[in-house]
Length: 337
Image 1 (cartoon, rainbow, N blue to C red):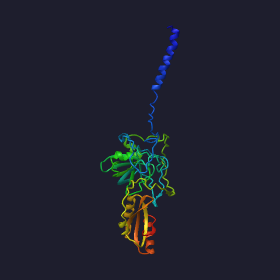
Image 2 (cartoon, rainbow, N blue to C red):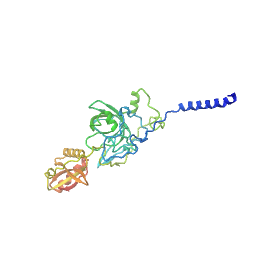
Image 3 (cartoon, rainbow, N blue to C red):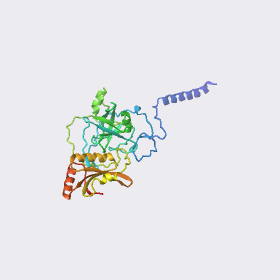
Image 4 (cartoon, rainbow, N blue to C red):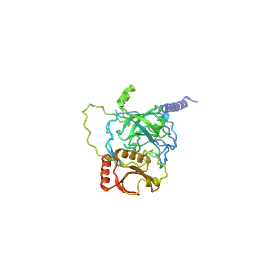
């Protein structure tokens, strides 16, 4: 082969090698898993179940990283709000928050839905729901039964049933070792992101989670927060609550509580835990008998929390006022049924 013919061939080989070299330096592209959503975990054709529960797709939670506390430079969601007639007053600063009590978790029924601050709930994300912490904020949650600890981003409201102080994502409950049990006694501690990064021996990153450069912090006088409007937030009746288990209604037991007279109905719940909680609070604040009367309405069991019997209209009105002043509900006057 002549030299004149070898030159074009050599040029082609060199170009091919150069192209291969450039290609090898490109960052690896994330693998696209068929049937997997790009935004959150789980199948793309996710059909939301009617009752909450654990996911049917499995993820190794040991490989899921805890939430990384980041300073929040924008406004937080901490306006007062009302749920089921009860008003909540979120705190403005979570850094020194501490509480101990039962925790629960929420899963497939809420997977992919918007959280209270507009983010998308992922049951395999390291997040939590809280009634009064500002959104967003960060907490350290310790399972007091086994000593396991996780760091979570609070981005949702709840739980509004029973005496639970926080609701965790399924992944968080799994890492804490109580996903199978449903609840656990935990300690919740607010995190100061600046202190957290100092403990790591590293400065706070100058880039926020959304890759926007953070504004330099400038020391300014702390302004008093302006009055904020009360939000009326109405979550689904089953949000952050265990599935309602059908129970056998004891008609004789309900009838024995009084067949005549006046009663106050303070609440009616599909969730028996919520009914028991309200009954307990009312009993602590009044000497009038409090009981739960269960009925079936539209193929669903409702647990009605009632007080009485009450002898006359005047006594009923006084009791209504005392319940309202205790912020335990808006009681209505009913007769035995």
